[in-house]
Amino acid sequence: MSLLDLRGIEAAYGASQALFDVNLALEPGEVLAMMGRNGMGKTSTIKVICGMLPVMRGTLSFDGHDLAGMASHRIARLGIGLVPEGRRCFTNLTVRENLIAAARAGHWDLARVEALFPRLEERERQNAGTLSGGEQQMLAIGRALMTNPRLLILDEATEGLAPLVRQEIWAAIATLKRETGMALLVVDKSLRELSDIADKAVILQRGASVWAGEFGDLSSELTERYIGV
Amino acid sequence: MSRESLINAGLIGGLLAVPLAALFLDAPFTITLATKVAILALAGVGLNIALGLGGLVSLGHAVFFGIGGYAMGILASHAQSFSPLMEWPLLIEGTKSMPVIWLLAVVASAFVALAIGAISLRTSGVYFIMITLAFGQMFYYFAISWPAYGGEDGLSIYVRNGFPGLNTLAPIQFFAICFVILLAALWFNARLAKSPFGLALNAARQSAVRVETVGLSPFRLRLLAFVISGAITGLAGALFADLNRFVSPTMFSWQLSGEIMVFIILGGVGRLCGPLAGAALFITLEHFLGGLSEFWLIYLGALLLIVVLFARGGIIGLLAGRKVAHG
Image 1: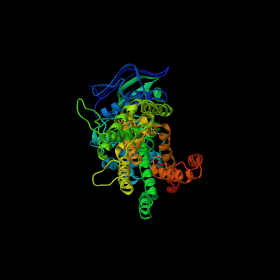
Image 2: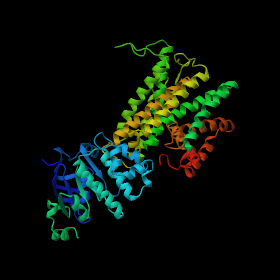
Image 3: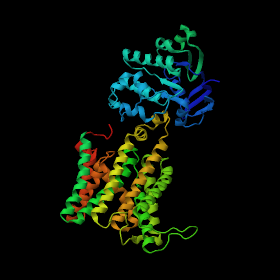
Image 4: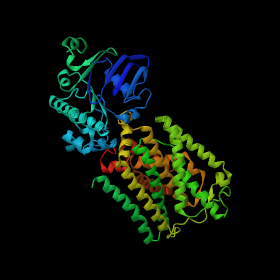
């Protein structure tokens, strides 16, 4: 059985339907890239997984638990860590406080997160609001890791960041995959960087998954047609 | 030490120095005023956990203050009339022992806070304010219409309750009790704010959704904060009743809820010693301006306006220089 399994998911914001037929499956330790142009339903799919957008039709489960109708914090407790779009740290807390506020016992603790992102250790006592964009992103990833998830969801983790910082973050994500075998669901537009880590890919088009398979099988025709690169 | 810690140390030192000086100058009324500051500050520390840390604008905290007061009034009135509270199925007698009264005050306010919180925390913003206000009014009118314990006239307790080893009728000794409890509450508050629970509560004030995505329930965080907050305010109510040796429905009034909130806003929302600074200023103004004019609250109102408009961090924010508490 898959770790994460979405079948025929439909969801709407009020009267406007956003997802029409999303199917995806993720095995333990696997890295799945979710791709598609802007507005095709990538973030909505993540919201459905995290219980922030109710499911109208379809089934979704994580590790055998039915997620439909479950409260967000319960879903997170099952072991889903989210790094939301746009680097959302708690800006009224310091770096260290951000990390320990939601910590749960497990492999990832303060020392391990700070070893993964040494910059966070340097800025431990600084207010999260005063960090650079890249550092806030590292903090958001670190905060999610501190909850010791089995699946980490990264929504546009490196969007709008300087190339050097992007490299640093992608290197850390690669370390996560290599050393901990954590399952990852990654939303990004950068094919080149995804190709280093992704095992599988799923493409969304107008709220539906239109292609799923091995990342290596993505043809240039497919990427041109659905992603525009 | 940061500037704010220095200010806090100064405030606490001042609260200790004034009654000590009054003891040597033989001015017992000043000691009573300082005791009142300590007790009202304690009530403010309670509300500050909900308001400052959790962002919960509760306009019904007098409920807990009143419950603490009536816990003292009911137990002590039965003890002074030598009539048991209950004879069947088990015999419960009144008591004049402060620790027992405090325990009842804390437990009863915590339970009521749990019930009120479980209902009102399903709402937010102006609805939360209105529901907490409504609960406050319910308790107020209930106390008025409960003749067994004095109804509108309240309850007089002739002799202050006792504490093992101390003579609580000596103003300075009763002050010492209240001062130590206030210190303990401040220490607890400081620890709480830095604990993972306090940090998560603070984070939930900024963004409830983000807190949920890391696996915490904002509702539960806030409910626990509300219960702790109510329990501390309830303890303050029991001490306040003992200070006056009198309990009445006004301890439940919404004006009192407002006053506790005014202490916090004057002193600085979310500041550890904000309630102490606010309560000290309030009592000082009440004492000096109140002597000049019956309408001294007009001046308090003007001061409150100035603080809200020009010094959002309250007195402590103004002196310590950092605009927002905790970042």
